[in-house]
Length: 257
Ligand code: BGC
Image 1 (tube, rainbow, N blue to C red):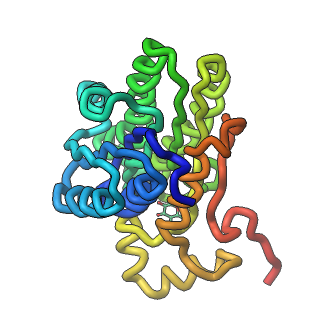
Image 2: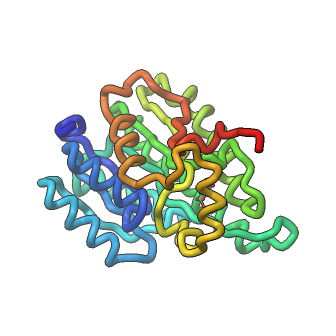
């Protein structure tokens, strides 16, 4: 649906690849101008920029690590400076590190929690501060995971972060509602993206995963992007504090034999 986001400005973190890239391009197609954030893949961010510009929207590409507070503030400041404001924040950047619980190092704990939870917290804070000063409404969408709810053995750090995100969203929906700022989570299941690279290359593991998915396939980044565009649009104006699961039925799956 073109035009649902005409005149809006959006930041999408981690938009140099995977779900983030698909979201940035989809929001641009619906008329938004974009801040493309990347941490370590400038070539991917450049590819996103080209796809955005091909839709006729503007793209500002910024290197920023959401785990660093000064970087989160810079992302918001640059959106206002270069694009005249910021209405939509998509907290998409995420990492995961697999390890048995008893082997997890402090370094890996910090890396996962810093990007997946602390980054969302402080970037959202910077986004909200500017909106409150300007008395403008806004919309935050967090790309969470089915693992904000469902166990993921050997990924305890990831689960701790995503579980925290679930509660953060519910809490902020209440605190930010009076300012006209909505916040929702999208909880993707198994989507074909670089985060899943090792799984996609391991046939037995992939087959075992697909057995858990009633729709019997991985999801596509574009499918997550379509849901994001809806939640960012006026059509979703009355939705806040919710999680939207997009997982081919993975989370509710149960059968005997
Ligand atoms: C994780 C993937 C995993 C999927 C389903 C996602 O949040 O990033 O590694 O395959 O959940 O379990």
